[in-house]
Structure formats: C-alpha cells, structure tokens
Amino acid sequence: MTHDCPHKRARGLDTPEQKWQREGMNGSSVRARVRSLGCRGPVRAQGGLLAQRQEAQEDEPGRVHTVLHHGVEVVKIDLTQPLGPQGPFDIILHKLSDVIVEAKHDSQSQQLLDNFQSYVSAHPDTVLLDPLPAMAKLLDRFVSGRIMSQLNSSLRDWRICSPPCLEVHSGSDLSSIQQAVIRQGLTFPLICKTRVAHGSYSHESFVNHGAVLYKVFVVGDKHCCVERPSIKNFPSGPCDRKTIFFNSQKVSKPESNSNLTSVDEHMVDPPSPSSDAVAALVKELRAQLGMALFGVDVIVNIGTHALTVIDINIFPGYEGMPQFFSSLLSHIQSVLDKHAAAGSHTTGGSSEETVGVCHPRS
Image (tube, rainbow, N blue to C red; front, side, top):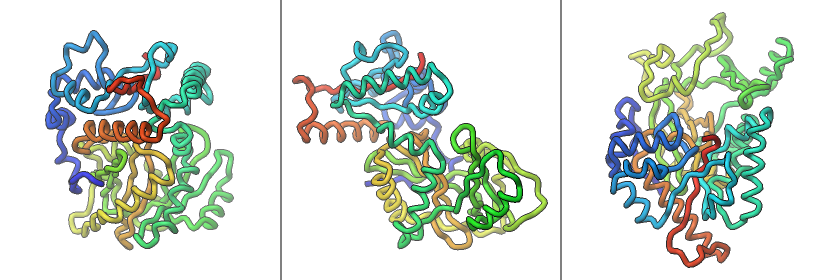
C-alpha cells in the first residue's frame, strides 16, 4: 500500500510547517514537537511526540485529537533515568543508532544502551520499533552492502541492482587498492564512505544518474518516493581530477543549490522509477531487514535505466512524505492490534496503549 506521492522536485515540496498544517497542526505545535524531539529535521524519533507537562498548553486540539483518535498515548522516555518508573510501555519507538555507535568507545553511551536492553529483556511483551539487531545491521556499510547486493539476484526481473563495492582499510597501500578495485570490477569515478562513523573506508562505483536522487520513505506497509537533487554526471574512467569532498545530506537537501548538482541543459533526463519496481523493492527490503521504519536512496542509471540502490537509512527524516504522522500512528496501532491478536499482549483492561519514545540524553 502506498501514498499517492508523485515524484516531484524537492524545491516544490511543502515546508515542515505547511506539512503539519495539512494534518491539523499549526506552526506552534511544529516548534513544540521539534523542541521536544531534540531533532534536526521535522521528525526524528529521539524524544517525545507529545510535549512534556510544561509544554502541554501549547498543544492544539487537532494534534491531541489525532492521538486520542488512535487510542494511543505517546510519552517521552529519558534514558538517563530508570525506565521502570516511566513505563509500562506497550511499544517503544526509538532511534538509538547514534548511541549504538558511540557505545563502542564511550562508557556513558554503553551504560545507556545496557540499561535500555535490560529493560527490554525484562519486558518481553514490549514491542520495539525497530528491533535493535535489525538496526545494527545497517550501521555497518558492508553488512548493508551485502543486503543491497542480494537485490541483484532477488529483484533481477525488476532490473534493480546495487553498485559493486569494496572495503579498503586505512593501512592499505595504493598498489593493493588498485588491484582490489580491478578484481572487484569497480569503475571510476569512485564514491568513498566511512564504514560507520570511523575506521575502514568503503568504495563503490559512481553511477551517472542525471543529478536526480529518489528517496523512498517506508512506514510499515506504506511508502512514498520523493525526488531530490543529487551529484551531477562525470566522465567514466580514471582522470587527473582532484578528489571532491562533499556531504551527501547537504547536497541532496530540498533547498540544495550546489555546483555539484548542476546539469547540462541539453542532457536527457533519465526516466522516473517504476512505481511497481519501487513497491517490489520495499517489499523485499522489509522482509530482509525485519524493519518497518527506514528509507532507501535509489537512482536511475542514465545508460541502462536500471533502478540502482545506493543506501539504506535508519528512521530517516521523512521530509516530503505526506501524512507521515498519521501513517506512523496507524502503523503503531496495527502493530499493537497484531500483537494483541497473537495473545501475547495485554493492556490491563485499558483501551489506551502507551507508546514510549526514546530521548537518549535530556
């Protein structure tokens, strides 16, 4: 099931305030939510979707009605405090990816993660959106790369693929890197990314795609495909061009105005992705990942017109997806209903479920 979300240039998208207004939420509520979430975008699951008591007076009736209509109470979880007194929770919505990464070298983050996992282990009936093991897979670019490479065979009939990639360790010499590039079938130009936030580097072949990126946002059984600006085409093969450093998040922002996204006015635009192919991709990834809240970055190869998957994102910003908040609440209710039908979920006679949303640090 998909939203009626046509491919459109990001510069024509509504602002976050306009999007929330369409869902019965005014500008002040948008500011309240962003402040409560402690986020950098319109929606990030790192804080409460409902404001705390001192901010409750700023909540407008439309937003409260939406929550009550779904029979869901949404509260903020503070991981720096014991979780037991803050619960119980029927479902926990979170984005602890940063905490998981930081826990490898930061004792405070490790303690937060240990406390969270202890609570989850002690409350097996509490549902996690999304499961930590599933999220952890996407934190390693080579694990996610293997997932994407499997699409080359599982979705071959849809002409969906991913670029070849290669792991390069920081201590590797130039000769061994060149041999590995040839052996893995990579072609220049190459995109170089860190494996996680530090450590080994990841290289993958750059695919010319007409400076158009498609962000596929997934919320349960709904998805939406939004067009964004992207890196322009480059000549294939080795050259003496200097290395280009860029932040992909900034380049592909709706308001991006970078020289890297400029295109030749005589260039023929690549075709838009087939809606059926995108639906097949989402279905396959949901099954492989075991996740319901994620995003997929795809491009269309200007030469072969193959739909090429270049990245998978944990709980993205959902900027440009219409009715995101309503879709999220609908998915939460669907998960709770299925959990209750399975006989493993009880609410103690209450008709209202409680959703906890994690805020790693207050």
